[in-house]
Structure formats: structure tokens, C-alpha cells
Image 1 (spheres, helix red, strand yellow):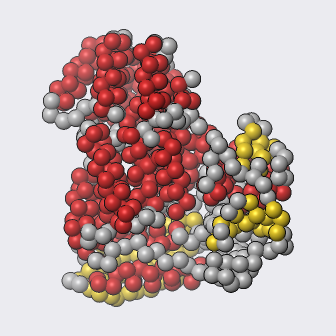
Image 2 (cartoon, helix red, strand yellow):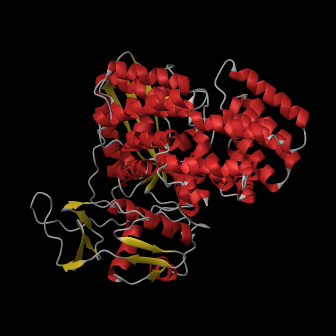
Length: 616
């Protein structure tokens, strides 16, 4: 077999084996096939249509554009390449791609990092994994593939039910850890915790749960605690016929709960082995050695998943976890996420100069303790994007987080934000859809896709997404806020005001009141808008209110001087909203004002020029 060497890499275009300095580098099959095609046409342009015909085929019902964008991004992540200054893959806008690095044809890839002859590449026979809008290879289906049944290689782990009356946090947490462990297995599609949790407790039949999550098998279980004793019951169920494929009971001491987790995970993988031929399951090694610290961390993540209401409780649990185990990197990453949340639009209760430095400090501590922690890289990147406006470094950290854990949903979510800030909207949409596929029932994954369409000024599409989101979770206030925002974009101002009012009444948080005041002013209800502005000003005497939020209302009222004064104050405070200023549809009437252009120029300067494209 023939292989190619370029830079530090060696690639076999028959087996799709990629190595960097002799060490295997992970790359999924679909991106590897695209890479092989580019290398085989070294130096020549390969058009997008040529790639489509060769790899996707004309009879495959997929959203090809999103799929190819995903593959190119995965190639660049793996090769540490950059679209703006490529070393390997050059983009020819609207035409195709070209592999530009010098290559050398070599024989088979012979040597591993320990000097031994490389083993034959792993071959895995897999039934196709069907997702709601996506596949494991990263392309998104415009309609379901022709195969009609979900593969056994797609699984949902439901939160383990507590049957001892001590709350659900431990069962939720155990499921989350199992989800992470299973996600390390390259060819197993695992639904994220929030989506699995969303279908628990609604009295749904297992087959209906499988249909909603589009998985082939479901892992269900329960936890009973008596003092320091644990009884964990687990069952693996085929959703097509409801039959139990496997079940087991584990009676253990609390001190060896991690051993139980590994034992359960291994047993599940063994059961799936007919579809996962001969592959070794990696060790997770993500938890503290202190069982109490571990339990506290899991409770913290449980409450952070219910943000913004649960954020303060999450902080309390994470703090207890690091007091129990000062070396617990994941708990520090949890604290970083929580403080970033409090300083951003999700919470908006801490000034940026108070929340984000804490978030960065905790993220840096997490990375000192565990440099290969995806959660730490993503949390630090989030703060650098929204507070320091250090776009290139934030992108590097997001890329590293996704390399370390391609299935970490928040990294896809937040990286999509950076792509919006730099006006790479197609790439942002691809990341948004990946996040939604990883966690389809999480209200934030649905909300984020709406936000992407709003920032892309695709208001009709945002409305369509909002209808689906509200059908899934009508009590989530942000869904109504963003639906009203979409109505504003289409010109339905009365409906926008009414919808946003419903959302704001569900929560009463200041950032949602700013949406209401803006909508009232746009709808011509000046008196109501002034009352909302007065209410927000009164709130600011007791808790933080972003001047950016006030500026939105002043702009809609036609008071440009006050709007710019508020935006200048937001700049001084380093408001996280400002990184999206050029694309903010609610401030579009300020475009062309010299003060707006000057503000964008200063943002460009402070971002090291990375936001320059947004100021055109």
C-alpha cells in the first residue's frame, strides 16, 4: 500500500490511517476520505461538485454543503491548519479546495512511536447511524436515509432513577459519566445527557423515547443507596422491539463507585461488540479519587445544566468539590463555566470585569492540573472571546478542545459564537447543527440554532426553529424571547412585543426586559418602553444591568446620543455582546453613523484585527 508524507504527517489513502511524528492522529472516516481525495490531486483544485460525486454520490439525501464544510474543518483541526493562512488545505472561494503542502510518496506506514511495526488498521463494520439531521461522519440529512431502523451503534443513557429517596443528582451524574466514557469510543454515537434527561419522567414508552432521540438502544437503570452501600441495576433495551438485550445488578461499596462505572461501561461495550468489531475501549480517567468530591461535582453539573436558575447552586457544589479535592481539574472547569455564565447573557448578574476574570482563573487552574482537559480549554476560550476579545487565541483553544473531545457539545456551541463574530456564517451553522445533534433535547442547543439564524438575519428560519423549540419546551423563557426577536426581524412588531412579554414574565431577568423595552419602542409603544427603561434603571441600583441592554432601548426610541453613550460604557466594561456588534440586527439603524464605525474600528484594534471582516 502507498502512503504520503507531508510536514509532520504520514497518511495512507487506502486505510485512512494518519500519523503525526509516528503517533496515530484521530480523524473520522468522512473527513479522511476528503483528505485522501485532496492529496491524490496534489496541487490541483478539486471542485466541491467533484468531491460530492466521488464521496457523497448523487443518490444520497444529505445537506452536502454543511457536510463538506464540517469535513474541511475537521481536517484543519487535525492538521492544526488555518483557513486564513493555510499550510495544507487552501480554500478557493465558491469553487473548491487545493492541497498545497509538498508531499512525498512513501511505502506503508511502518513504525509506531515505540519503534514496533504498525499493526493493520482497525476495520469496523458499522450499520449507518441515523441522527435527527446528522450522521457520525458529520454531514446533515435533509431527510432520513433510506435505511429505516436506528443502528445499535447509537445509544441514549437515561438518568439513573433514585429509589432510595435521596434525590436524583447521583443517578443523573452516574449517567453523565457513563455518557462521557461511552463517547470516547470512536464509532458509538451517544446522545448528550440533557437530551436523555429531557425525556425521562414523562411516562414515555421506551420505543417512543428511542424514536424521539433516534437511537437504536437505550441504557436504563436505577440506584439505591443504604449508608455506604450501593445497588446499581442496569438494563440495555432494543428500542425496535422493546426486548432486554442485557441486564445486570451491581452491589458495591461507595468507595469503589468508579470501578462500578468502568465495569458497567465495559459490559455494555461487550454487548455491542458485534457492531464494534474488535476495538479496545479507552479508559476515561476523569474523576477525582475522592468519592464525595466526585458526587459534589456531579451535583454541580446537574445544576449548571439548569442555568441560569441553578448556577449559584452549581458554584456551591463545585466549591465544595475542590475543597474536598484541591487537585480536581473538572471541578475547576465547572467553576469557570459557572462564572462565565454569570457574566454573560445567560445570567447577566455579574459585571464582566468581575465574572470573566474568575472564569479565566478557574479555567487556567483546571488546565494546570490537567492540560488535556477539553472542558478547561473551552471555558478559557469562551472568556477570551467574550471578555478579552482575543479571537485568534480563543479559536486555538476551541480547536484544541474539539480535538481532545470532538463530542463535547459546549465547545461546538461556543465555537459557533466565535464564527459568528468573525462572520463565518456557514461554518457557524455547521457547528450549531453538530451541537444540536449531540444534544437534541437540550433547550440551549435549540436556542443556539435560533440565535445563529437571527445573527445571520435569516428571520423566517429562526421563526421556524422557534416553533419546534417551543413545542419541545414551552416553559423555557428564552425560546419566547428569541421567537419575538425573529418576529421583529420580519416586521411583525405587535406579535414580537406580545411574544417577548410572555417570555420576560416567565423570568423577569434584566436582559430579557431589555428585549421587551426594545420591542415596545419598535412597535410604537413609547410610553411602555420608557417605563421598562425606568424599571431597568431601578434594577441597576440593586444588581448589575449591562449598559448594552439600555442602549438597545435608547436606539429603538430614536435617542442616538444616549444609545451611543450606553454603547461606549459597554465598551469600557468589555460587554460580551460587543463582539457581535457588526451583526447585531437590533442596531442596524446605527450603521453608517461615524460613531458606530469608530466603535467597530476600536473593537477591531482590540481584537488584534480578527474582527476586521466584520467592520467592512
